[in-house]
Image (cartoon, rainbow, N blue to C red; front, side, top):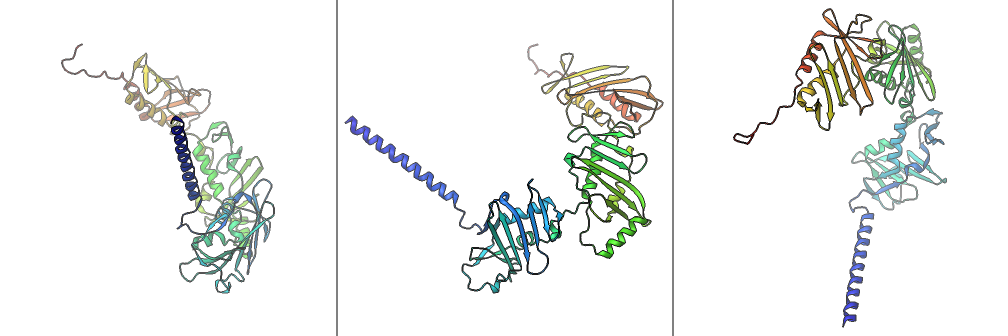
Amino acid sequence: MQSKGLFIAVLLLGLLAGGIWYSNRQQGEKAAKPPADAPPKILSLTESDITRVEIQRQAGDSVTLVRDAAGGWKMTAPEPLATDRDAVSGFLSAVSSLSADKVVEEKPGDLGPFGLKEPRVSIVLTLKGGKTSTLRLGDDAPVGGGAYAQAAGDARVFTVAAYTKTSLDKLAVDFRDKRLLTFEQEKLVRVELAGKGAPVEFTRSGQNEWTIVKPRPMRADNWQVDELLRRLRDLKMDPLLTSDQKKDLASQFSASAPVATVTTTDSAGSQKLEVRKNKDNKYYARTSAVEGFHLVAEDAGKGFDKGAEDFRNKKVFDFGFSDPSKVEYRDAARQVTLNKAGEKWLSGGKSMDAVGVQSLIDRLRDLSAAKFPESGFGAGAIEITVVSKEGKLTERVSISKSGDKYIARREGEPSLYELEAKTVEELQKSAADVKEQPKEARPPGSAK
């Protein structure tokens, strides 16, 4: 009897395991199949396998793009040109995984009515190993604003949406790199600006930390330097200029007054930009990266007419939005030492009121120069030390009284920062307002 019971148990266990296996298999097959209402696929390729793109046109120039050994793309036809990385990436993303709106005909007898017998555009994709995949774009569909399409080796005729057609039907100008300067910002090591006043030179001291080294060493406002680089990055050529327009730009540039010269240096070398302005306040540019002369928007042109003072860091402290772990403040009336312990601030082992401490930190964070005087610093009336960034940054600042103003100086730096009297008075008040955390009130009648 025991053997019979054991046999039945094993049989039931086997049936259960088989049922689970079959259920999992069914679910896997179901997951692998696209939903019944999913749009039909025209092409499904691995984007990284595409090594060459040819956009052949029935009328007009064809375009050929070739992937180089480094994985970048170059245009070889209709003429050798550098390409816009984002434009090529967008095209490859669209064409490698291409879905249709719907299937119009499964097996059409005549492709002529769809414009696919002699397609207006054929896109030939060459993959690793030499295999090719071809997409044909035909006439616009009479309803819906899309277009007819067909893949080589597939008899079906599809319609694709208008935006899909736009993402595929590209000209050479769409892929061309239109930047006047082609530096890689993350690899920049030096930027030189000769504009208003003495020439300025910036060097990178960290991932996104810039320092002014000429006309003399000074702290740089990283946001202002980044804004300069953004203006340089955003300068674009007009690739559709006629020969007469190009000649006019050349003569306008020659007749205009110099505004600024900017030189960028990255791991690939240096590139130079010259900006000029005519009597009508129109700005023109010439660069070492591309040929010709170019019209520059007025706001961009004005952005290069700057000097060292425009890029100086006006903030007295660098800890920014990083919460300090230690703050020391001393003036003639008081001395405050604060240490962060978890979420609490301690002074002499006592918990301090977080609101008062935060007010002091905010005053220190906002301390900014109204001017940069060359002299006037006397004996320090206020001494401040701030430790932040997990102990990696220690800043010491002295503030002295100078007439009705105050002058600040950072330890180890020659620059002076003129502070408004009201700002320093508010700082002193915040330091005075740092108090011990109030003890919790006890309920009436509780034991002492």
